[in-house]
Image (tube, rainbow, N blue to C red; front, side, top):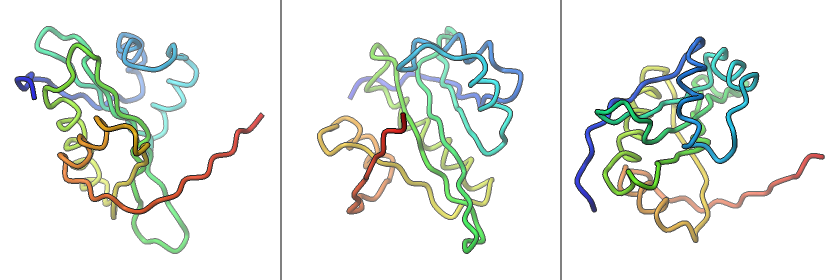
Length: 145
C-alpha cells in the first residue's frame, strides 16, 4: 500500500453544488445540477468528499439513510465509493468509510451496509480493511424503463 495521503473530508450540504461540480471527475457520469440540488436538500442523503492538501478532490462516498416501520433506528446504505486513480492505495477510501461510520453514529443508525461484486477485489479489500464483515447476500436488480 502506498503512503497515506493527508486529506480533509467535507460533508456536502445544500448550497455546495459548486463543490460537487468541482468533484465531477470522481463520478461515473457528468454531475447533474438538478439532481445534485435535490440530493443535497434531503438531510438523509449524504455525500462526503475527500480533498488533498492542494484542495484537489481525491475521493467521495455517497450514502442514504433508510427507515422502516418496524425498526426504531435507521440503517445507512453506502451507495457508492470512489477514489481518483492517482490517489488510490493511500488510505483515502478507508478514511471516507470511517468518516461515514462516524456520521452513522451521530445519526443513530443501527448499521451500515453495501453491496459489491465478488470480482471487485480492490473494493473487497477496502471494505474488509475498514472493518466490514462479509455477509452472504443475493442482489436482484430491475431495469426500469
